[in-house]
Length: 451
Ligand code: BGC
Image 1: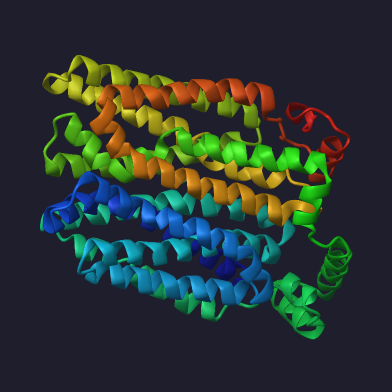
Image 2 (image 1 turned 60 degrees about the horizontal axis):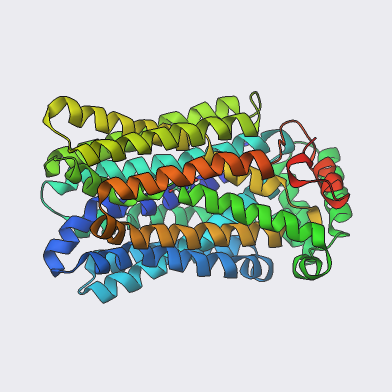
C-alpha cells in the first residue's frame, strides 16, 4: 500500500473520529450547560437532538453535493462546518445559539459520514476496502471515547465551553488534511475529466496495468447510472430492499444505545453516583464500546451476520432488563451499584459487537447497484431521524414513566428485534453483491436473498 493511499485512509478515518467526538461530547457537558443557563430537561433534549436533525438534513443533501461538487469539495465543506460549529458551541451565549451551533455540527456530520465511506470505497485498492471500512467504524467509537475522556478531565472545572470548543482542533486538522486529498478518480471519470482521473490513479496505484484495468472497470460500472428514485417508483423489489435498510437502521437506534451515549452521566446519577464517579463510569462505557467493536470485526466473516445479531440483541435485552429491575427495586449499597453498572456495560458490549457495525455493513450490502446511493441515503437518513427521536425523548421518558419502565421499554424493543432478524434479515456472509441483487430481483423473500 503506498503512502498516498495510507494517507487517504487515515483522513477518511478522521471523519469517523469527528463523528464520534461529536456524538460523545454532549454527555459530559449537558449538566453544566443546564446549570449555567438554568434550563429544563426539554431544552437539554433539544440541545442534544438538534445535532441529529442537522445530520439528517446533511445526509439528504450529501448525495447531491457529493455528485455535483465532488467528494473532495464536499469533505472540505464538511470540515469547515465542523470547525465553525465547534467554535460556535464553545462561545454560545444562549441555549438558542447552542442549538444553532449543533445544527451546524449536524450538517457537518451528515455530509461527511455520507461522503467519507463513499470516497474511501472509491480510492481504496480492492484488497484493502474491507479493512478500511472497519477502521472507519472503529474510529467512531474511538472518537466517542476521546470525547468522554476529555469531558471527564474538564469536568473538574465544569468547563463545558472547552469540552465543546476543543473539538475545533481535530476539526481544523481534518480540514488541512482534506485540502490536500486527491479527488476521487471515479467521480472525475463520471464528470468526464479523464486525464485528471488517470493522473490520480497513477498516484494511487502501483503500476500502469492496474491503472488501465481500473479505468476500464469504472467505465463499465458507469454504464449503469444511478437511477434510485426512478427505480424506487417502478420496482417493487427495490422498494423491499430500501424498506429493509430503513428497518435495520431503525432497529439499530431503538436498541437504546444512544441513550447511554448522550445521557450516561445522568444514568449513573440515577444509580446514586456523584459527579466525578459519573464521569469516570462514562469513560468506562467508552472504553467498553471500543474494545467490544473488535469482537464484531473478528466475528463478522466467521459467524456471519445473523448469529451475531441474535446474540447482540439478546445480550442487550438482558442487560437493559436487569438495569431496569435494579432501578425498580431501588439500588442500595455499593455491591448493587457496581452490579448495575456492569449490566449497563454488558448492554454496551451487546451493541458494539453486533448492531453497531453490522447494520452499516448490511445496509450497504443489500441494495442493488443501480439504486445503491439512493438506498443508502434512505437508510442513513432513518438512522439520524431515529437517533434524534431517541435523544429527544429520553429525559421526558425518565420524568414521565420512570427509570425502570424506560429501560424495560428499550429491553422490549430488543426482544422484538430478535424476531425481526429471524423473519426479515438475510445472511450475507460470503455471498457476492451480484448474487444478493439477483435473488432480490427474482422475488425471493428478504430473509433468503443472501443464500
Ligand atoms: C451508531 C451511532 C452510535 C455509535 C455508537 C454507530 O454505529 O450509528 O448512532 O452512536 O454506533 O458506537
